[in-house]
Image 1 (cartoon, rainbow, N blue to C red):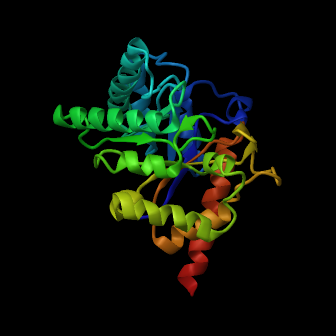
Image 2: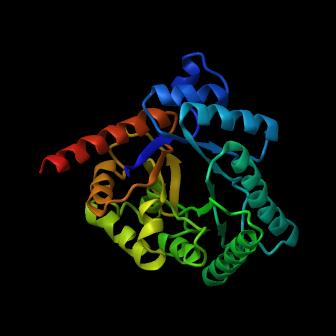
Length: 290
């Protein structure tokens, strides 16, 4: 198994070339030499199930696997019963869209502190996600599907990699989304060497096992950050903030991991995803010659 690469949504170049709509993205992504595609419902589920079915069929025809990013409004630490009910609904609705997309991964942001202490917010988030996963599993709704809580980039958000791994340790259908741009922003630029990435994967193997770590979900982009963490997504042209992909690539190959890697660069998601794939293949080729 090898790592798979693709964009989160459509690059500016997709539209500049006269394309319009997600149906056209399937063939476009395939022709670029990429493998996967992540569709974001960040602003809400503004699509019919029939349209989702058509999109799923077209991506399947092109051999491009889809994943979904759930709405950004999710907060498992919410103290508002109405907002919490909506949070659960965003997950269950996302699973319905995932089925129509013929995908297997639903990425979501876990929550935020609000007026709670960090410990209170995390424990609420952890227990609620664990209970939801257990209930969905009992209903048979997680067969062949992963819920993928994401590491976050701002200080008030729940989602350090340790928190995400503790959440995922509760149920085998929970798969971590390591957003290394977020991790780097939150830790003020800590991801510089291969060992910095290996440390995270080693902790993952310790807490959730090798099998799930091997096929983890990854978001990657360079991100500008300040004292409170993430500010904005950049492109691979940035030379100031990072992180760079090569150390992550070296870690993946040395550990034998084969994740899905989604690029979230600003406006150049496909181009930077392809650059990552080329670096990965080149590095893999060098190792095979040793």
